[in-house]
Length: 134
Image 1: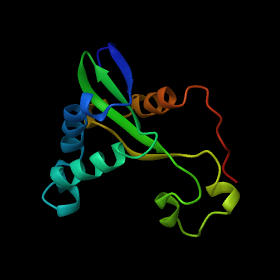
Image 2: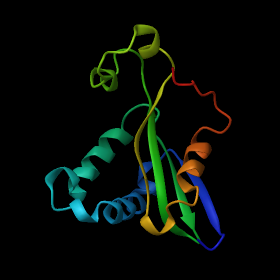
Image 3: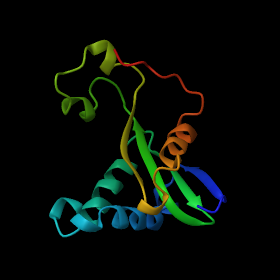
Image 4: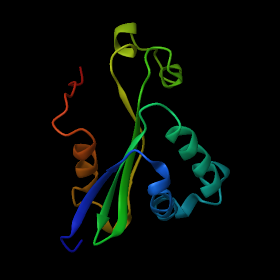
């Protein structure tokens, strides 16, 4: 990292599509031969997630080079399909609360352990309320 790090918050997947795919390919290079990790399968998931309510991404750039990203969706309530995948089922007060689900977060190898993941998180939720684990 040369000190020219920037974080860009976006709500339009098309504007960062290639950057997200490039980061994904590098981070999962060792598994791209497996069907779930193939770039086409990731693209399908990304397109589906980006079409869900409240999709938002933060992309980190070092001198214009994409180095990491986080994308998330605001859940639509207790009936959101996200909750059906959680075991044990959350209490209705939890599932009905305003919740954001991080769907993907990754940082390219060369830029890891430099606080970029924390930066992605903090840009997505600047000063936001955080619930402490029980």
